[in-house]
Image (cartoon, rainbow, N blue to C red; front, side, top):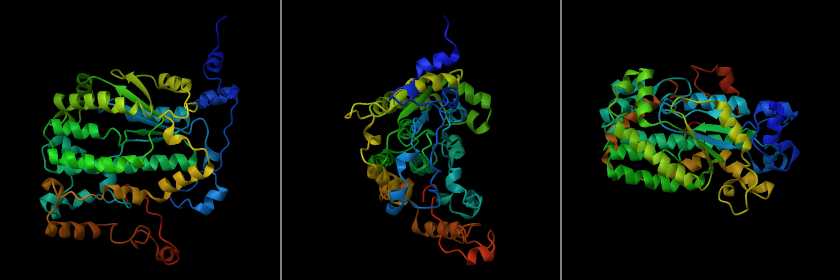
Length: 393
């Protein structure tokens, strides 16, 4: 007798009938009559999570089978953002697209600091993804990649903080774990110097031990020839005519991602790889995720080491770290960069940059206190400053 769709689902993921807890899509939960009730999300963007709060607000009270951190990775332009949104919708998770330099240059009030370029010395002017694609040999490419690494690091902290404070699963596009693939490709193509590469790995060594590995990595593969075809289809002039997006650069990135990133991460995370040359169906990925048992590992399995805590207070300590100490964690990047001239700006030019930056629209006052954007009555009766949760603090 043929099984109905519901019977297939029940056979495939009997999490409601056993002690095992598998990731479950919204559709599966509805079909099984599972209703997930959680406390309201903790407002971590506005408040610190304190020791006193931890006595009444238990971190694990919000956890369920979908409280997982999933990283979506793969070559440039294969559709990671689109599939990430679909997966998040189907699984009831929070999606975080890859961070861009817009986050670095656009302030809280929407002013784009790149508008300051005409009044700044050449060494101090902005350099973003588009600039890199158009001119990868520019001296600004080195600082650009260091900043991107720091942005991805901060973004990943945000992902963990969101998971711990809401209980929501998080799907994040790219992570600091794979950022080195961009650096190595730039180095192979001689876009950056060996000194810059060495400094990057000093920062990497300082910063990465503070992070938690993801539960799952989803890798969408497409050959270099297909990546170039997709770039032509998008028909963005700075991609089509890019000096950076050449075969050597993309092949190097593919090698770093497939043979270093995935190899190393497979020791700490589950890895799913899909041929995404012609796109694909998110339902296939959802079904594979539903089959995975991510909660029942041996005690000494490194894949559970970052997420296995026997006491509630350990979870509270972890949550305090990622909720309250983002600025402290980013201090891992406070390493002198004096060995690489392309990462340094002359002092007199720094003075010009600092003056222009802090006199730009929206930067003259602390966030929440600019009379141009807030009423005086609102400002006068504020009792404390808003929590600083900027992308790089």
